Image 1 (spheres, rainbow, N blue to C red):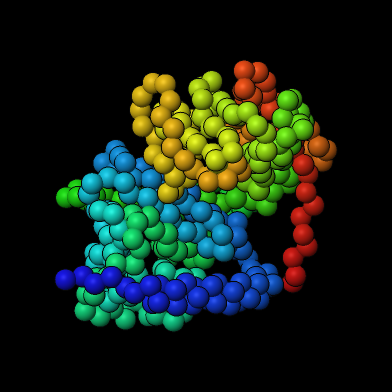
Image 2: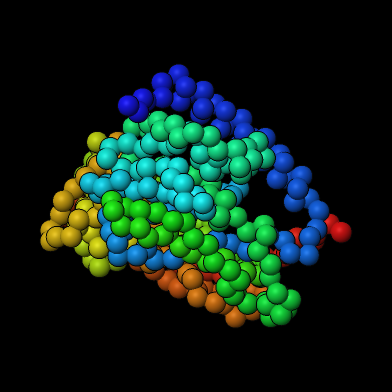
Length: 340
């Protein structure tokens, strides 16, 4: 019988993870202080669209100090994740997450520092334990690391985004074997970045903090609402998407925009008409990725700030319809000099 890991053990694991993360930050800072011919910071893992057989499973790829896969499985079947030798080391679903503590792949991908502490051939007898009481999990899968991905000289000299490799994580949902796949892309040093900015908030000006969230092509909006009337935010298809009130923030699970942007662990999209509200925050504050304000197209080389797009997000405050308006600009950046 599979036993659950104790709360004390989970807390200890959490403290160890934080310590490892801090140690890794120092290690990475030292490792990247020098120059290399193929700086792996210019090669990124990118997630492919999921196969139809994984319908109901939500997968995100996040880049922090290393690529991290985040999975939420609300289906009735467990999602099993395999290492390159075909040994299962994670089962996500059926209300919890189980890990094979005897599998080296689990330990080597559980924290950033783990690959240096656990050898690839250090696996022992299977030892399945519950490690999370909900069907959500994230891990730093080594197959997404770009350190050993070579970038041909002609691609570097061309200075354009290009595919330079592929990655694959074998999985099984129920009885069907498939894979989560992606590619490695060479990304040249940016000559600038798109930056979104809120320019007008209409009737929200006196009661609400509205800010654009930047940092990637998938820009977003953060709203902190302190008004007395209900605030509705409409999606890209003019459908009710978010509802702010004193008790927190709700999302319309029938929103087509929510289907595109829902983060792992959030209420799932459900096809349907009208509104089906579910809570996403117990406070009247929420931030979300919004496809209306991001910019993913190429920008012609320019040394000056230019407006890439103007955007509006429809809202309704009580009975009053209005918009949150803004612009997304191109901001040139000066490349940092590399140490020789």
